[in-house]
Amino acid sequence: MAISESEIAQVRSATDIVALISETVALKKSGRRWTGLCPFHGEKTPSFSVNAEEGRYYCFGCRASGDQITFVREIQHLDFMDALRLLADRAGIELHDDANAGPARKERQEALAAMDKAVTWYHERLLNAPDARPAREYLKSRGIGGDIARQFKLGWAPDEWDGLAKGLKFTEKVLMDTGLGFVNKGDRRQDALRARVIFPIFDPGGKAIAVGGRILPPPYGVSRPDGRVEAKYKNSPETSIYSKRRTLYALNWAKDDVIKSDEIIVCEGYTDVIAFFMAGMPRAVATCGTALGEDHFKTMRNFAKRIVLAYDADKAGQSAAASVYQWERQHEVDVFVAHLPKGQDPAELAQHDPEALRKSVVDAVPFLRFRLDRVLEGANLATAEGRGRAAEHAMEVLAEHPSELVRDQYIMQVASTLRLEESLLRPRVAELARNPKARTANEPPPITVGQPRSARLPMPRPGLEALRLRVHFPNDVKDRLIAAYFVNDVQREIFEGLSSDRSLSEVIDELDRRGEEEAAHVLSQLAVDELDREYTVEDVTAVVSQLIRSAVTIELKNVARDLNDGTMAPEVADVTVRDVKERLVLLESPSGQLAENELREWLLERTSSRSS
Image 1 (cartoon, rainbow, N blue to C red):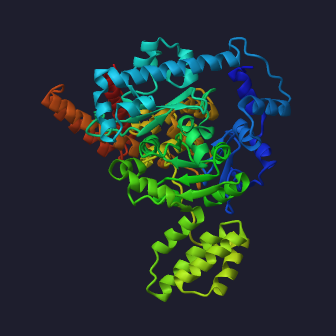
Image 2 (image 1 turned 30 degrees about the vertical axis):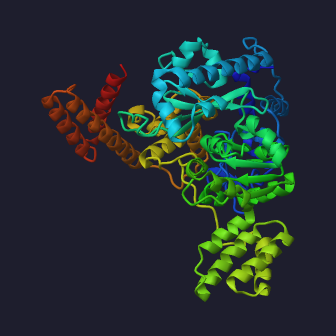
Image 3 (image 1 turned 180 degrees about the vertical axis):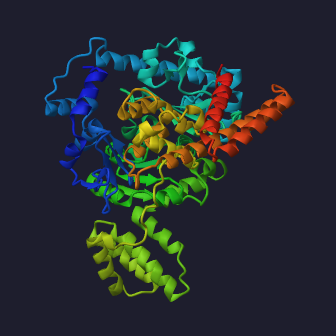
């Protein structure tokens, strides 16, 4: 049964998210928000925050986020429709069929057929199209030749706005349902991926359900003329045929060897998976743009008992230890960590030393042992003080493991390494296990708004402050902000979504559907962000001024480029630069509002002329 968007919105608005979550989590009022212990990962200090007005939750520890429907789905392991029905019954709302929507089964079949055609189309482009030559050269530089490209059905998305949509004559509905495209602001069909190497994603049965796209690095790729940095990877959004938290890339090819060896290797990226196949270990998989989670473990336990994390050392060490130990016990699996050389990923290692890659898996150590080794390797064992500090850190790591018997085995090893008596360590480890609040080390690093897992660069602070104001004090800034002020692509996507008539949840859902994962993540976090003070008119003006300065700085570089290209006369460029800089000075003066308005009009004129 397909439900109309209006009925979904009705269920959301009728469900008090605080009352709903309070049935599972003890929430306490904290300023404008509600906080409590996250139900999705083990923690002792509350990092779970709820925005009652917007109906959103966010965990600053594990990054879980969503609305009322998402919460019920995650807690009770239901699909979307079952969660919606549960909340509708709770609110006394009767759901009806949407007369304009076809049967769900038919839509799923159409989506699968369209994805299969798209994968074939991308694959043929990579193999035969002249414009795919840089992609072929890049893959060869990574050791991936034609046979491997054919085995994994790798593809190429041309640098065209609508190459796929036009080439396969996909309707708007098919593009949206599959995540392969969307309708742009000009009311035209547009591809979701362009100028990217395509890695098709299949379900365990071999049906194509999604795609991931990687930009070409220099010298194979071309930088954007405006200097903005694009995300290295973009993945399909969640659809009726694709769930990221349940999907493992390459499981369809790896499962036979996984079952045979009773081992599954988990990588960070698609090329790392391919590297293991090329090195003679065709039992590697990867998560698809999301962290390794419980649903992945539920899938893996059906195939193998030994799970080897083939991440680089820093990322493996940052894994949520409490969750890993819980999943080991709950799903009766053993988690190991491969010993990869520092600074090298599997794809790099496979090219120059495949035997070392294979050995890293054979010599993988248990997760707890790996974390302890990291502590001891970085310790100064030459002094009593250094050994003492190492012991404190090691005991905190040991205390995270739920099994007293396992902890005791490692206590003996730590004591031997640090030349300490076991009798000194056991009481302290037992105390830390009973009272985790006593732990002082190995806490996860603070999470900064706008820097999700996939982010590689920090977000501009003025843009974040402006978006924070737009979310929490929209009436104070709605007439003072424009999209041209946001020099960061992700922040501009968020602002444009907030400028529509849709609710915050609808904007986040739309960003997810379009594959704008980072934008959805940042907006989810901003929705529950606690403000420590009220903003004054002067505060708003300061934020807007910073935004304008950032945007004008970028645009003046574009003026210099126009001058060099000969598209702007020298005298015009000189006058433009002088006038703009004079108005920047006036921003802080009593006539600042006039200067702000004039700079706003100049930026609008410049951006509109480029888009026309």
